[in-house]
Length: 321
Image (cartoon, rainbow, N blue to C red; front, side):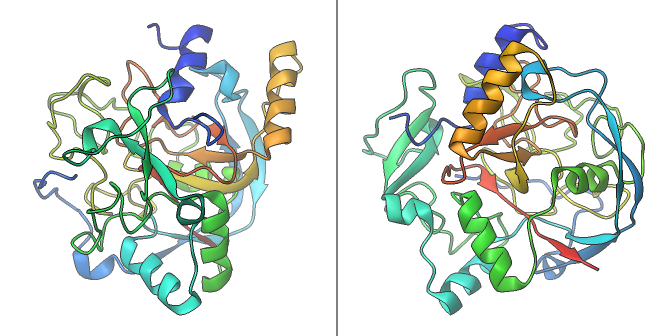
């Protein structure tokens, strides 16, 4: 599959997560500059306002609306240094008695490599690596029999946009806009491809974020030490002190999904997105790879309905100054 082709764009979206209407972590090697465990609870970073470049003039997946680049002016804001963790979300659930949408639906999508022994689950025909697992939710990520008790510093997953907004309301924050997310991820650089610059991660040595190594979805070499999500803050931060703005888990933003184009395909995509009330997700996940879902780039984006959840969907919060 050729990266950047329209065929790649159409097919690659499915590796992110299928729609609801479509019917285990390896121990890691510590990394330099990783966030100390004691600082992972709720470290917030000040992000300066001003002019910012959003999007790119060199889109890889044109159908996603990655381009063209545009200039916006943003007010200063604050952003969580890390994605919201299981520990933080557990405190919310305990205090508010909240039930996530995955719990109310009774199931969520789990990557096939993480099925428990004897577990049987249906998979959408177009994305056989995703399995509809009954009982999978934020506190049982692989379904009944799994737990997050030993994963307090992992990003919470199986959370929908609606769940993220509920948490934000409880905390007194909000989801960042897509422009704020990109501006923060660039760390002060105008057109950086990744949060750390332009160096490409590789399967062998340059493990710059938590993504797939090997041939997706057949073989994961685990060269970076992680089969699934990593504890937050395992990789060096960007210039603003933000961790995991590429890979690990997809992050919800507050913005509706829309493609900025007047083409026929874009208009049809926008109609579908508006009908489903899709929201923008950023950052990619541990399932991304350049050969397939090359969406751990800052300008990359996808849109999903606000009730979708899966084993790689999470979020971080922004706060007004």
